Length: 283
Image 1 (cartoon, rainbow, N blue to C red):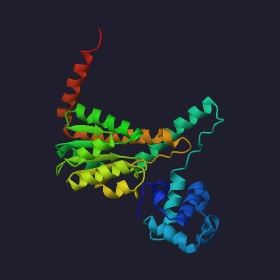
Image 2: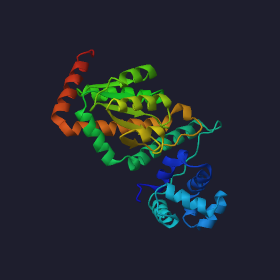
Image 3: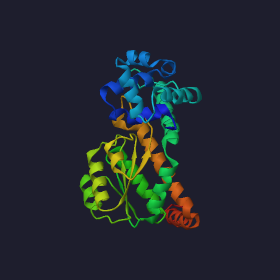
Image 4: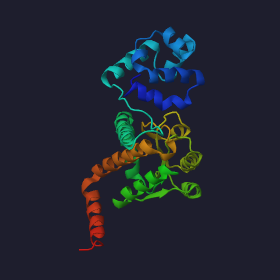
């Protein structure tokens, strides 16, 4: 099995692993350079699990065994070294906060560029171009991303709407028809309201797409097309800092890829709407 990045793959499935397997994952994520040189017994001892658990961990990620996993991990450690940056601490200076925020966002963009599947992106573009109605669902910070998506796709003349209220999401989802598109946006992939709306949209026959950080989440399992982001949220998770940046960039990639499929038509729409805005500005 080939992964764009083994460490990113581990982070993406971490919440779905069993507790013992999570200990193996955390040991590797915290010490990737050392893990490359460990035997299966050494890794098991460091993670306080059995050799069999290490093997199960590797197979659960889709690898044939520990040796294949180590080979691919070694390639990532050598060719894609992990940058040094830390969590924001209450005692950090303004300068340190600034550096950590920007480094976190930069890393989220770089990791998402590796994780976001081009084939999934292509499938999503084709579904959007064929849809008679396009919905974007989000709650909280992901709702802001949904609204940004509506602004972009509606501006090129596509029938896009965003819904950030749970009742509006489900009442509109059940009215979708086969061939329509519903896009659920959730960092965790476990936001009940988004999964419920997507489930109803799927039952109505719509093509379902999600933008999420975790490939084994409920939302990802429900959707026809999964657009994976790769951001790490820590102490200030409620602020949805780097995850929002990664989601917005995934929307941007989806939008531009759609525009390029019929550039003249969509560029004409952008020009027309820009002129309408410019007419409102004071001379």
